[in-house]
Image 1 (cartoon, rainbow, N blue to C red):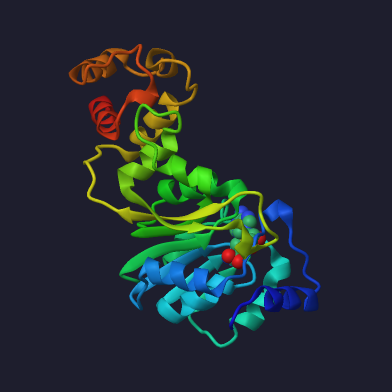
Image 2: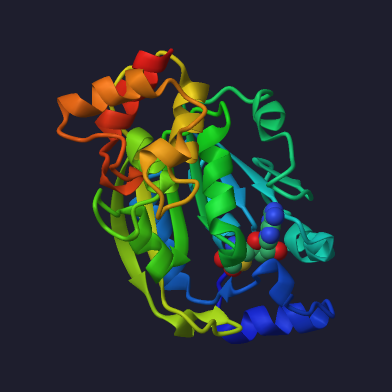
Length: 275
Ligand code: SAM
C-alpha cells in the first residue's frame, strides 16, 4: 500500500474511524519516513519484529516485507477492519488486540523461534516510558529497539550522570543498550499533527557488566531514584548502608550523594555487593 495523507484519511473515513487522543493516535502519513525507519532498522528474514501500536498499519506494511515475522499489539479494537484490509496479502504477521502493558508478551513470542528480536514502533507518547520499562524488565531478549518518541523524551534517554534528565530509566536503558538518535521528524508528517516534534531513536544491545542478581539491580536503581532530591541514605534506608557506603567510597562518593551522580558501573558494583 502506498501512503499519502489523503489516502490514509480517506481510508479512515470510509471505515468511520475516528482518531483517539486517549490512545496517543498520531498516524504517520509520510512514505519516505516509513522507508527510512525500516531501512535504518536493518531488518532481515531472520528477524522477528515486535510492533507496539500498528494503528492503520502504515509502518507494519513495510515491516512485513523485510522481517521474517511481525507481531503487533494494538489496544484499539476498532482498527481491526482497516488492519485486516491493509495486511491481507501477508501471512507473516500476527496482530493481538490487547494492551501491551498488561499482555503476556513473552508467552506470545515463545511460539516463534527467530535469531533476532527487534522492537520497531511509532510509540503512543503518553506511555513511552512504561512501554520501554516493560520491555527492559521483561525476560525478552530484544536485540534492537527502533522507536519514534517525542523529541524531549528521546533526549532524556541519552542523559549522562550528573544531568537533570538522568533517571532510573536512563540507567536501565544504558546498561543494556547503546543509544543513538537516527532521524529528526517534523510534526507535519502525522495526522493529527501533534504539538511536539519527534525523533527516531535506536537502542542496540551491548556487552554489559556482569550482574549477580538482575532483580536486585532493578530494585536498587528504582529505589535510589525514588525521591530525586533526597540523598542515597534516605532513599536506601531499607538496605545494608554499611556495604553501600564501602562501595561508594571507592568512587569518591558517600551516602550523602544522590542517585543522579552515580554511573551505571557504580550501581552494578553496589548491587553485586549487596547480593
Ligand atoms: N504505527 C502507527 C503509525 O505510525 O501510523 C500508529 C502509531 S500511534 C502514535 C500509536 C498507536 O499505539 C495507536 O494505534 C494506538 O491505538 C496504539 N496504542 C496506544 N496505547 C496502546 C497500548 N497500551 N497497547 C497497544 N497499543 C497501544
